[in-house]
Length: 272
Image (cartoon, rainbow, N blue to C red; front, side, top):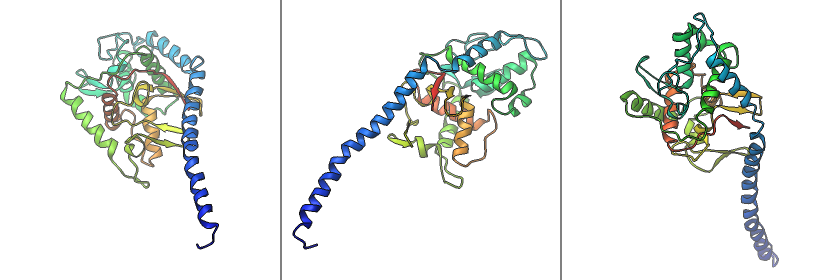
């Protein structure tokens, strides 16, 4: 390129390109800030409040073949204690000999106290029948610990084992797209469309990632529990759907929950 105007033109082009970089960064920041402001505006009218109220009523309602309430259900802090339980789940329960999250624990309590068939509950599709009730109950239980800090126990060997299993599952790659949980949430600064993706391998900060679910999804008008959130993550990875309250989903909950230690729970939150 020997034309006398070539060098000035190249210099101008470089200057324009470099000058546009701050604008691009500003646009990116503005998009994230706009979504945050949008969520803030919707907080006062979060439809999750309706699910929360339903869950509170279901807890005290006599239901099932045994016509009993769930008020004797032990969520980890003693029978009937709800406040503070959510920020310590999943955890090991001696009566079932399993590490359980809030939803699998509710199934155990509904079976033991109210006489429901646990296998039938687990097979019910999300958003239908008793599964909708389990989501509402989980929403209320989470709301009772809003503002508290996550502190999942890791004293029992099974809790430690599930953390390691969850870590392996988080990094496991496979499927037609060779994806893993870490593909989206393994490092800082990743985005999908206008959505910032939290890094979940360490404490991502208050109210981010694990600390925000259950949450109301504005895009589809549904209340999503953590089990449904993980189920949809597997769909996005083009993996087969995991079974409800399967060991892999609970192990992932342990891994993310332990990594979120000290983060403030804002659940039930509102999401895109």
